[in-house]
Image 1 (cartoon, rainbow, N blue to C red):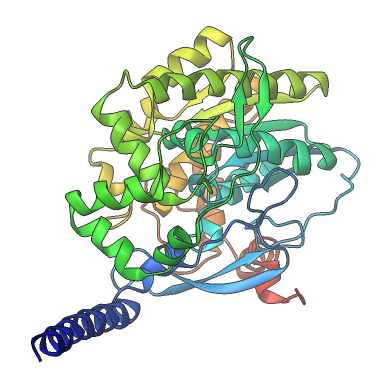
Image 2: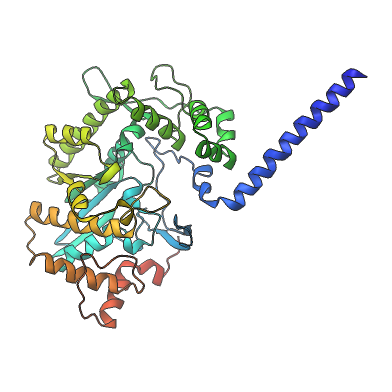
Length: 415
């Protein structure tokens, strides 16, 4: 009798626990749709186990800001988050700029016309000649995946300029991805494929897992340790480069800047950037690293790039000079830069490229006027008047801008 009663009590406790978890999970799926990207993220392995952007797709995304609504996200036939198409074969006289990087380059969190690649493209084309800015940006990429993407996708598109938008967590991604290492001579080597256990794959599919990590520092530490074992290339069994591995390593890097994993990441980072620099030079391509402003910058990486002689477009000084409060250029409820931040990035990347590539333009007034014409095409603009100068812009001019940069919205393609 006592045994039966104990079993019954145990069953009630387990049943209640399961019901509570199920109810919590159901509630989170309704109340926290923003967690969907983490829960449903998958790695689509290709030759080097990097998840590729979809080709020819369109879907709605939520803005990270409260009340920000939804916006359309299109990936064109080449996988770029741009609502316009590009031909594989570069046209005569065209100068192609390939922008590589992670979420700060892809800019899924806003309408595409505010992503810095588009006003940058517009500014360049206002100077004369023919320019194409191609956005290879892929959410979650590190330096390792940027390097592989350049080889697999960038080389075939005959680029003239390569921009790598560096974010401090790219070092973390290098360790979390476990795709590439360096040997004792400092040469790059690929790591073997490793599988994730069914248990890890299961708990990664619960909204509750990410909610607990977000809500509790203790839970974050414990769950991250489960999801992301320490980096041991010879004995590692679980690896898929997920976001939680990045978060766990990010905590370690901040807590201990002398962490050996951080030092190892810098060795790999150096080798990857050197390889990118070498391969672009062989193809007579100009190579630049764009350093993000504020907490996304990294003085150690900046010093290393300077030591290596890599040309850097450092956005930190102009942002510091022009922005009184970082919340002016970053989302309130998301760590990424907003539409205003992208506008400033377009301005200062344009200025740096113009100097480096000997592109003539009539000064800052030209930039203000051109940007005013660009943003006027999109009605209720989400940027401030900074770097804008009121100019006359007729409806035909506005329609021409929209027709170029929103071509796939205005005339949807079959993906």
